[in-house]
Length: 265
Length: 159
Image (cartoon, rainbow over all chains, first blue to last red; front, top):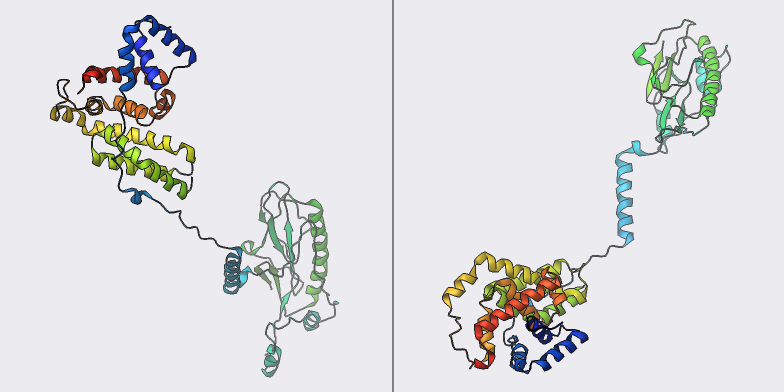
């Protein structure tokens, strides 16, 4: 309601265009009742600041901007760069290349090895092993020209099996490389600990293996069928290898487990 | 907002912003700094400021910076001492008298009057720019205009 006490606020709001329809009607009605206020109405209407258009900001150009350029890189250069880096790494670090170990998840694969009969010699046994192919063509011919030294104590790698078990609890697989013999007392181990796995001699005498040289087998709580198959296969190999080893004299037996090896005297 | 829209804002709004800053700070050099800083802020925030909100954003930044600059330099006291804006002074025309009267207001009241008279913002819009509510804007504006009236006397008395 417009009164003599607040009419100035209404006059200001009317001059500012802030009155709604009802308020404007109420103000007009009040002014009709008070014609002496007409001069004040005009004063409020005219008392408005006007901007001086001659005042301008002259340094507009300094404020202008350009859109920053974006360098678009296609996928081809990135792919080529990645390929170059990968190739360099493989050349510089051959160890990164996939090895020949047999990696198994859930099952065990054991390479076939022909164990000679008890009457066979170590040389015969070695002859039965596959001959490695040369990495460089012509290498064998060069070797033929050389005088072959007499192999007095041939190295015999009995077997090599890599087993990869995947734990259902631990997502990270634990990889073990087991060679030769696994004792029948092999049990599932929740914590890795050294296990004596090989017993083989050349003269039917069991030579003790130093404790610190024993390979370590890490078997997690894992795939039970795979472990059973591993155990069974290894036990068969133990029997065969031990039988062959007892008949061979003057020959070093080396049990290789991964990158570790044990020489059996 | 892309660079084209930003540059359009520079061309359309820099003069008005500069006039506003000049009146708020009472100093041309400070006003130039305010304009430059306001547009720089707009450029940095252009990803978050739509084009239709650019003007309000600029005046909000300019308002805050003008108030800050004015208070830091305390020019108000200096101007009141240096310039005779007494009501007895003769001003040729209502416009000149109002300009002189405006200089006697505090920084916030001056900004409110300028936002209303120069830019035509509503009370609600001024409240958003100045972080005041609509009622406060109305009260502060009323006090400022009454002070202007008291300074210049009756408009019909201005030469």
